[in-house]
Amino acid sequence: MILLDNNITPRLSEELEEVYPGIIHVSQISLERAGDIEVWEYAKQEGFHIMTKDKDFVALLNQKGHPPKIIWLQLGNCTNKEIKAIIKRQETSIKYFMTSDKGVLKISI
Image (tube, rainbow, N blue to C red; front, side):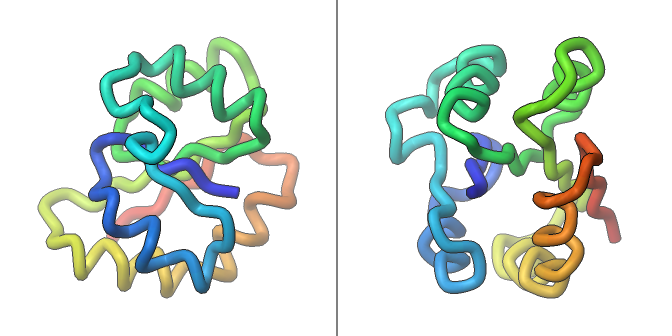
């Protein structure tokens, strides 16, 4: 399952549900104002992978190991529509990553 970080629009959780069942946004679990550590701990405890634009989660991964795993979007200035399209195009890579031994998947354009 995927947990969308606060720097990604909450609408994507609904728009991507068909492709990624169980995807949620931090705002759906009242963590929209939480710090990275709190989001990290929730994801670890509940079995989520964190999708983020924030390199701080990669630093946490390097410090603490995984789980949770990090899907790191390095997309620069993109519209929400473009981000959605990129995440959908990367479905095979993302789903493979979630079952792999790797801790971070970097998606860039």
